[in-house]
Image (cartoon, rainbow, N blue to C red; front, side, top):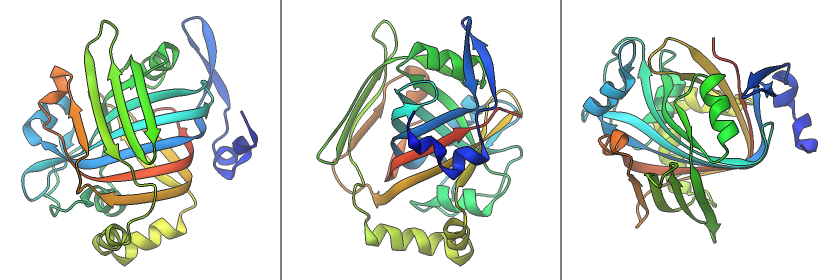
Length: 271
């Protein structure tokens, strides 16, 4: 832990308890003090998304009939559970079916800013520290499991590979990151979220996103701050493949990449 833990985000949401996981007392809520997070936003097969969400949650669809989805790769260098990496698959959903949203590369951003009923549903999570995976599964109620990871950043290019114990491949990819902001992408994003959405982003010290757990109605709030952010459209030879047979049916099609460096993150206890 470093001086970064004194940031206002952690003052507002401090560690105030502990929870037993495998006979060890671990801190709660979960904090990340530093690291980099890569988000690939896009769409998935709506039927496969609905099947993974199960009863109680409906996937948010766009006007092309696709479900909104994101893939996250995290390289957390300083965290309350120790340094670790993770891969997450998220669908965007609501407790009741909502009208389709406009098909657009940045439909996820607009939905989270403009539609209070929308939740980010974590359908799969892999961590390269078994203790972190068990914490996420037992304490936070997430569909988490341990995996071996290879995550590299070389001259702005990310490569990642997550394998479950026994060698089953979860996902892999090679993605040109967003180390520098793309003005064209930023302009397109701001136009899509509108003045009200842009005002909310600019006036909020932390970004709050509610996370749902498929199979239950429990929701946990997450709060994020980063030193640097950049976004760009995926218009190159970036390759991303979900190999796990349960999730390959999603037919994930990424549209943009967003990179958050100098990450600070809090995952609160589910309610």
